[in-house]
Length: 150
Image (cartoon, rainbow, N blue to C red; front, side):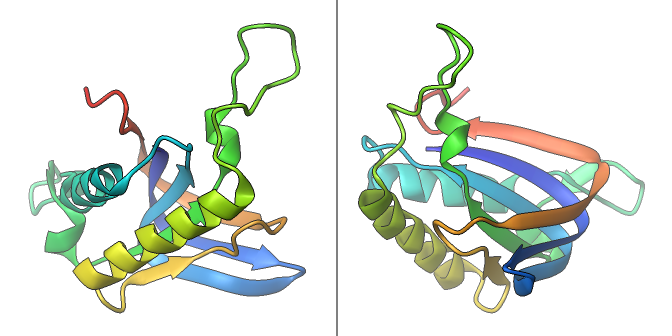
């Protein structure tokens, strides 16, 4: 599982001009799911995102986690995070999970986040053509991959 995390002042997702998710201050998290992802990957990713110390403390140092600042998460499924670009110019998405599998895993990820921070989780619409608008704060952008836990 791969996640691109952006600390934002504001973020929203629209589908067919209708807003389906929005947050003020928090984390916009794009998630790419692959077939090999399991429950351990889900738990590791949620724990890591919730505890990343990327919010400023009183002295302006990134020293506080999402749990400490009580901000929101906007979770957006994005299979293109698994793009392979080694050969040619057309990306391959061979490692991305099929839509049916990815939908179930994405919904499970949402459930885990909601269990951990009830009322602080928003999401895009799985499989839809979404328009994502954000104001990146910092900018702070972090890349996580459950298969490369560096």
